[in-house]
Length: 342
Length: 297
Image (cartoon, rainbow over all chains, first blue to last red; front, side, top):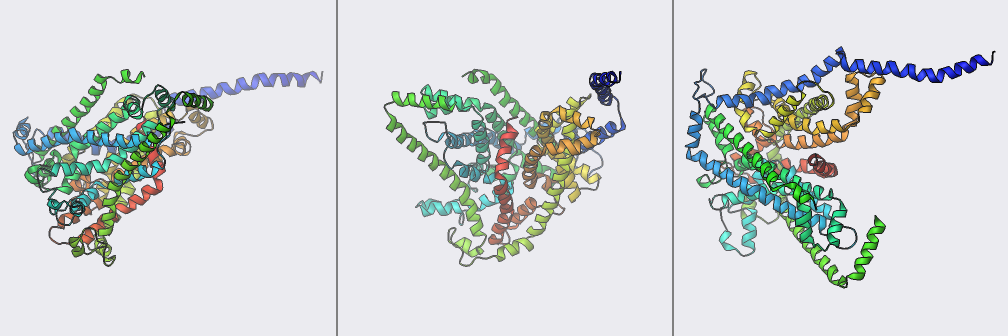
């Protein structure tokens, strides 16, 4: 008898305990998920409410107000404003200076992303496939030096880049004309790179390219390294050379990275305020480097025509959205699927 | 895999009689690659070195020859830039504004991303798209109304006004990046924390946040660069306030037409560039990792 009792209890405990323990625990968890405890309510209120309040007040509401102001003749300091409908937009599109600024932005948005992306793709390709063509696919030796150095400009404030290059382009004591005259090109002794309307835009574009090539090179290198090595090996066995591999394998496979780069560079080209303000704050010779953002800034904070400036902002925003939409559409139309089925 | 590779190589060795030809080809490609990359590195480094060198010259030395080394290394250019041009106080203002904004945006952004990624509630999708909208619209559009919002609150031309604006505009990027990061953390851990009796607050601060450290570091670096380099926001809403570095540098360069002190201007640019460059060189491994992390979705 005495021997049976403990055996019963030892039999009972292992079958009973887990059941009895796990069921209430599960119930507790489920209840906590559904019931609104003080803990959870306070958590959600603070965690979501605080960031959202700041975001709505300082980001979303100004964006929304800008659309309304763009249809008024508000000067900012007058207590009243009249609703003028699309009048501001009519003024903008008949304003020669703003249209000149817009066409400059369009030139930038066409050339800047392409130049930057092609240059950084070339450099990224050299870094990743410049190594030996036998054995495992290798990158170029000591290439991390190039990556680190190329990335330098990305860490420099844009305004400092602009001021620095403004000095480099200086006609009489700048670095560029110094180098050009030193190698025997006497015509460049005091050539005003930023003061001549034929070169001002090109010189400015080069500065922006200089600032971003390294960043996109690093991005593309990361993308290329993410491609499985087997694909490159297979291509090599099939007899593809370096150039063919880059064009038919690398570029299609990092297509998403290229698209991201294109959108970012395009948005930057539609802004470009800092570089323009630093290199040619007045818009350059014959307004050859004037951009919409500069004109907006001038209209708002120097002339006090806030309604008109808001309308310019809306035009700028719509242009940006159209550009992003076009890039996505192009990518969709040319079809990524076809290319990846290698 | 390695054995397969080895056999493949041997096979190609057997069937490829032009082995020496390809290896000279390799050498050519290798040296061309090094050449091109070297050229670009030179294009990057030379302007920087020239700026640093010029920062030790007098104005007349800068005028006489762009290449010549300074006859005497003039550190007083730095002293003038730091005190007379006010770069020192601008630098301090930048540190305060960027430091405060960075801490606040990291805390608020990770909280918001955590709630959006981990809880389902009505309106979550709408908030997510609202963040997307803030990321795609150009900042320019917001500047005019923001100017008046801040003026009504008495925050125009003040450092707190600048901080709170930086927080607002850095928030969408922070939330986006961390959203996917929090999404990828395993659910079991939250449940384990709940079983152990941790409330929602404790779970976040003591369990989830420490786990998100790598993601937080990447976002913090990008936010730092973005805010430190910010130019448009300070010149629009802080034009008459205590200047931050980017703003002060532009103002200093703008005066150059009247008082010619190019040595001090180059010194001011150097002071702006070098600290960030040093930080970058220290953290470059981390940063280069983040570039790939941030864009691979």
